[in-house]
Image (cartoon, rainbow, N blue to C red; front, side):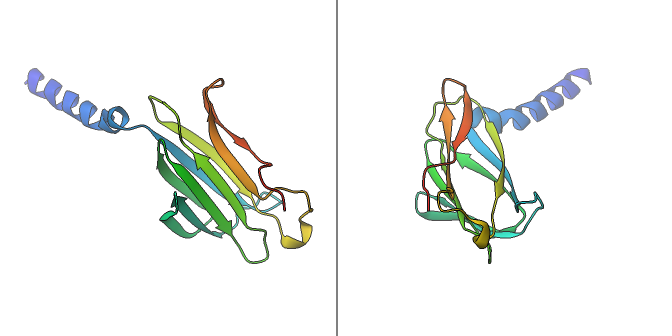
Length: 139
């Protein structure tokens, strides 16, 4: 009886870790906010290369991005400046990584000329984490 229970527990453990052992991902978990940090519903489109992989209208996004790929997340809302977030997952990670972020959208009338509207998220091997760079494109 004890052997049967041990086999069952071992099987559940192995099934539960199979995702972790078989593939490494960058898991993104983001919220969409206005300037006063209130959650706002936006339209979003997530692209892998130029192929649409996920879209919708929400106050947040959750997605698993495969490694060694390029992704683009486009956020739009009437009356607000569009925002684009680029994700590059080109790395040799041996484990899953979670990148949590807040994307703040600003009203069109409050945008300054030199303010960036695009962000790059990339893996920093020296720090062993994903970082972001805000000022890649200025309008």
